[in-house]
Length: 488
Image (cartoon, rainbow, N blue to C red):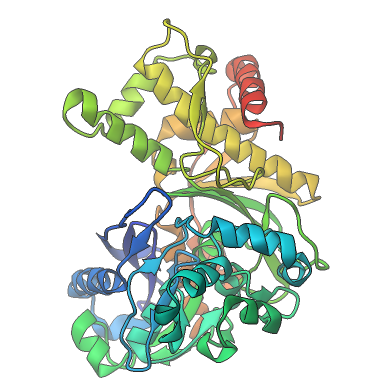
């Protein structure tokens, strides 16, 4: 029917976001709730799975209060990749999740690179401390009792799927990020699972992203307010879902999202096995294509950090309007000030989690606005480095879509267009991973094909074109950035 709705539920790094998507591609309602990241040490990042569930319950109750439950026909999931959730045979969660930002397994990652490169080749991606495989090895080495008691090893959205429906399922996009999946076969790899110190039976079966995996149980319905029996699709990891929600499904469109992390994703026809250094090759939500990822670990986080720094001077966090006001009077190129956005290590193209952020080129003539604009420009230059790395591998990039938190800043959008030297199309809806999950849920109902749902659901709000007057200053600043960051 024309007024039916599908829900998209996305568990990001800092919050769960829920959207209700109408059949015509418009958003009928949305809600969100945040949760905490615990940092017991500089290299650690943990979250409580119960916090995710509590946030979901609050958000879905708010959402359903605004909707006719009879109109909600399906739900799809999305979530931050590589968050390890261990559950025992009684369904009890065994401690906090080590999320993707956790870097404590650098030793295990180095050992995997040195001794197991041949086994890792089937993943077609470089091994990183972000991934599940070295995280499980760390647990095996340092907390053997905990991992020994685990009956199931979930990732974030798949744990939520299990809580909602009792079903055990993941999708190929999520699985391909773990360094445990053979990308060509889209199946768990026995050698890599053995290296992780677990059994394949502890992992979820890999299902299509847009196939119903289970239905909301009465117990879950009573807690979440979702309809009993609502079909739930596995959806995709946040990269796959944002690719769908931003239109990076057809060849030629690259999507840039600036949430906590920055993701640069492009759809690529399936290729033979092999690593593209500095990039992550992942399964897309359709079996005939891959999703290639360029990662900026502290994309939007760089702006959040900058806002927090202001607390030490003014007694409160700066808001975005403060940053815009400070930066807007500074000329392109920030008068030579450069920022390296490596607050959580360097992603694409360097793939170096030990790299640190920093300012360069500063003099007594620089003021607060220069520091702000240099952060905007530093992230934009990292986006350009990602695109150049794609093109070095022969990936066709005809059109740039920009979305999520960073896209709400017209100044930052313009800086990105200037840094790329390309038109930037800003996606109207902000929560693109949640939108992508809702699109996948729509496809799972069998009433429409994925291409047509994407076509009517991905809308462009505005276009930013490169400013010719900024070109020379931006090119000079880009050259300074490249020298300090290492040529790309």
